[in-house]
Length: 283
Image (tube, rainbow, N blue to C red; front, side):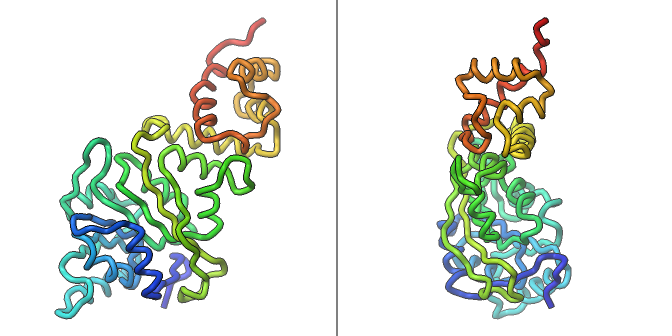
């Protein structure tokens, strides 16, 4: 039986599984990390199309069953699959890809792809981990539909927020197709969607500043109902006059709201914001 505490909702529709595999643009040279292998339905669809599948599963029962299935002479998993029991948030994905798949990083990019029907309750941490450098070639996740909308949201839209900006400075996001709740067992309370994140050739944000940038935009979006000048005063303790003068020097209207700023504008705001905390107030 599925375990609710692990957010288990199993997908077995072969048509949807096939579309998820195709979203990876699979080749026989690919090393693919599958996050949350579950009952192995996606694993079995992947294995014939790629060079190596590293199937990560936290649930000991399911991991054991996957290993038992793999040992069967007529198994659909075959010898291309390595089953790893463990928490994907705690495991070193890059080390696993190198050790079990022979994947190597090159030009700042990891030599593997990532795919998974991931639990809703750990979606954001898993996306953040997937986008940790060196970045993979492509990430395809089945997520809650609302999260898919937030990931690809444009500035000014209701769904646009810290998650949108934090991901879009690193990757191009596409919502590929919707998946109805009835496609899963047990049926979740919401619909889902498949998203593809392809890392930008030259990411806008440097890896060493990404964590601080995410914290900065999260704090700003926590004040999204306020004008930008007010939000910056709240998170920096700088005076109203100083904040407005500083925004003016950057050519940004202090009356704008944070959700109207593009990821690039937010990044520039973050990089320049040290001036509000490092420079002393004028007397």
